[in-house]
Length: 420
Image (cartoon, rainbow, N blue to C red; front, side, top):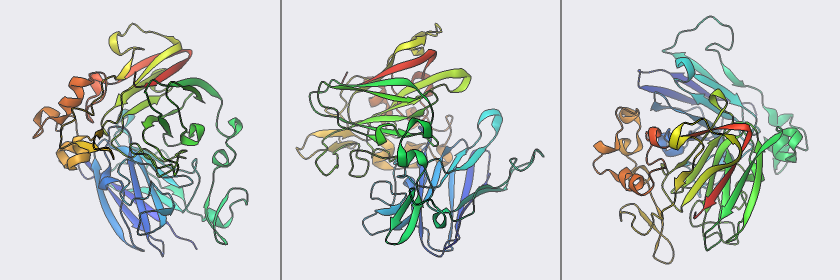
């Protein structure tokens, strides 16, 4: 059956943008939102949108992230396609491929908005995005303020070897990379990232590629105490790593869970969780990397270049160690603490995660670096993270003391250490 989920961008003011979601399908769709690192989660990441209904979602003026549609979600929150970990509000988790994605960057390079519809992670339903007001065209053809999207129902014509079936019907169409997971179907791998577990217990690393990037190791694996594993990624790969703890035989993890499975397969980790974020061969050919506590903390983690790089003499943020070496759980403020089954703190929430206010989440009227200063919060919870982990992001606009860069020579290999 043909349908389309239609997104229209309205540039409402200089500091906020409206995204209107139209569900033209004759069935309910559950939109999912995932902000890029530090950009916030509109509507806490998801909601229900009935057949032929619309909803306006306001985002900050420099928001960037992805939007997708989930189908056939049940009362438990599990969705047949695009699931983000058995919950309606994805809360920082990505959708499990295959899923059609809208990717947006507002006020990017040269002040331009960048947007596209991506089938790199596969397809689940038709999707379109178009600007509707508050913009000016530069007269540069169909890619200048035009409609991006996929208007056809690919499930009807999906090759049998790529089809995801529900009964006799195809409900999604996998990408070749997802189905066959070969080097030929994504890109040449050029950088090694070694994951080291120095904790006195097992850790289950999770891996999520940014939009359009692959998912190494299908998104996760077990790493015993004292073990290490080399993960090879494409030379232009970008994404995030995190450590999960307390995982059981069903795949459910006490912290960092990605939907009750060891291989996260494109899904993100459930906050609170310590994140290592990396973009290889980014702007000006630099690698960008950081450790983020914006989504909270669950275990100490560092990332550092180990070979194949050259320093630019740029000081403490040039090819040095980023991360958090202290365990923040024992002294986590009680109102932020997440307790495990044993009664001890197993994670420490961010203020945004605990209270979900615009000010703590740096969104809406607080959606810029000028309006969201942790020093002006009712309680400066970010200071607890920053004082204990000065080389990690403590909240969304902590860029100046948190982002590290390095130049590949020819390609930088990195080490991520759990419990350094």
